[in-house]
Image (cartoon, rainbow over all chains, first blue to last red; front, side, top):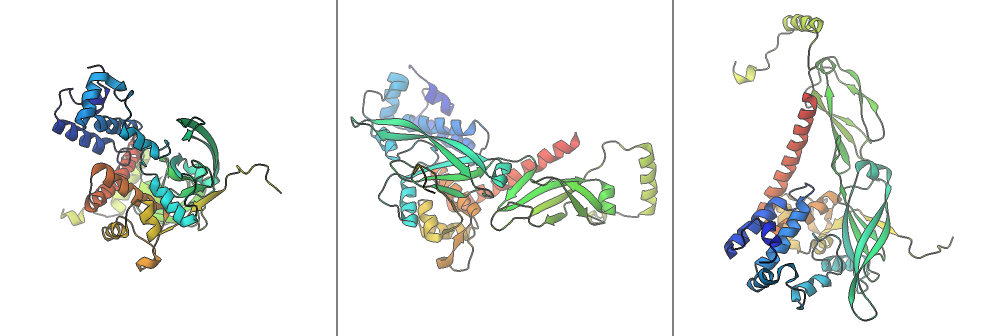
Length: 294
Length: 104
């Protein structure tokens, strides 16, 4: 045994049975699928497990791997390797079927028959999507050189992120794919510490004090374009949603910003506040547990 | 003004996709999309299938469903459950982060 990386990727011993390999792969795929697990290492682990399963699930490849280690397929032409090249790109391996993009966009935009469309996905910050931004993409493109060999070439593409772009939207860069095909970039948003994006709307959880909730009034709240004053109604409820029209994403049709009120007590009450609370307890009869039957 | 280089990138934003465009985009067929809609995984704008349009978040959700079904061998009911649970988990994670922040 010269190399055990594939076994380690699946967390199995080198004498694992075919059933063990299948079971381990399925477990890893469920756990680390990039659509399920957003942690930083998930993508790499998912790909490593897939590469390992590709080799270990095939008895011939597994035997070669056990014998020659990581270079098991070097001297022999391998149909699987060839198949991967037909994809024509190596940017986002999650999309293993680039042909469908060519077919699709050929149909939609009438570019069928020329070049190879490519597909990529980038993560942008919310602020970048609101104001627009620039991004430099490095794309690995297979090219056929003068002697007919395929080489990987790094292509650098300047991408302007349009203002008001929404998660899931696709950008089309004409002629930037392989051999004059188009490049399609799917926009994903990085998770934001303050805002949650839902379509063109933004949601923010806004903490307020019990007295702000009771009395109502004006509180400062953040928006992506700077803080604003929000009018809280008197007798505001925990979880109540207030809408700021047009303060969401600056798309063609502007989104709204929703503030969900979250009542927070001060960590420690002053003696004076405590005394006032005692007065309040007498002045305001209220049993929030009435529907619990107590 | 004439542009010096033809390399200047033209960028189009794809706003919505029709039913047939979505099927090719996800590498599937109309029946698959119908089943997704029946299970509430994605929801089109417009009432009848010929006029259906899918917005970016639904396009992304359909693609995610296609990837999960392909990679994990799920059926539509399974992927519907997975996507709902992921949304729920994300909401809970956010809530938890918020509570932990306000505890400090």
